[in-house]
Image (tube, rainbow, N blue to C red; front, side, top):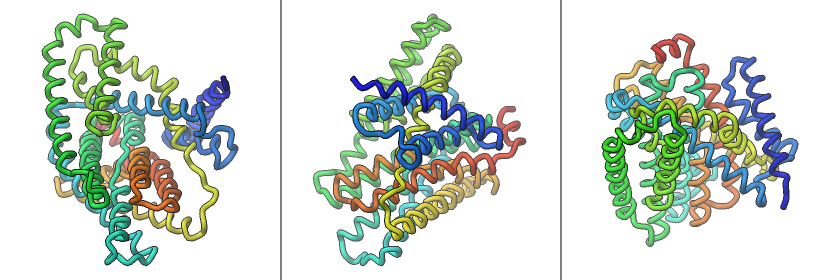
Length: 397
């Protein structure tokens, strides 16, 4: 057995905390330090840790548990009343926030490489680059907003709702585009699965509500946390494996189902302890560990820059416009747009599926990874700028 994973864990925990403290000294979110820790320890700099082999698989799986805990906690802290009030805003924000990046990404690829979109195969590739840009990874945003005390505000709730809808819309778009390449993929089947999934979530919510008396008897007891954790991981598994919906979406809904329960605070405390001390550190570091800056030509570097700029602007404009349509202030619209900028693991998953299906060429994968990493790194910084101290105080009130 190779015990390097023990050394890797020690280095990740130490580096994420150290760089987190340093970032905090410069008035930056600690999560930025955790992301940078992965970049420093990974192949781009010190090359101490990589994502290859069994040890890399262990880091990858631990990171997945970390993001599940993160989204479960976000669900537990959700204000259902506020989410219902902002559901229309979340829907409109998500829809426009998918359309604008889709068009922008396709246009950027076609114009940069002077592609002939009259060719069917080329057109599909252009559209798929746009599909990658439609993704939103809200996990970084959630951690940053929690750190600033803004997660429960109007903007934070809208971002959470929009990100969940965004995932579903992105999956529909992916299915449609995939069906254009592979006729075995049926968009109607995907839509049917989403409909059934919604029914399952509602049914589980009603069931847990009926079981509330039994569950609350275990308040502040270890079995309450074990039961709640079991439910979260089970729903995450069902979402990913049975319905093809991201496991983090299932984890979020699991938290939402328990958000009004008497055991919520106790469970959230246990989730926070496990997540903060171990799993979240590995998750944020793992994002940085995936950065590999070598082997790219000048042309691909330039495309990575173009793609990143388009990725940022299209989410700012798309989601910001959606929020503005719903009568948000200009400042709230900007904050909403910024909160949706991070692409994270969602875009990587979409890109990988595209590569497997031949929807995207191998040489484009590196620029996409650069785009994902940069948008993930800058989102906490942009959020810090977009939210003022008084905003956090209002959100807490």
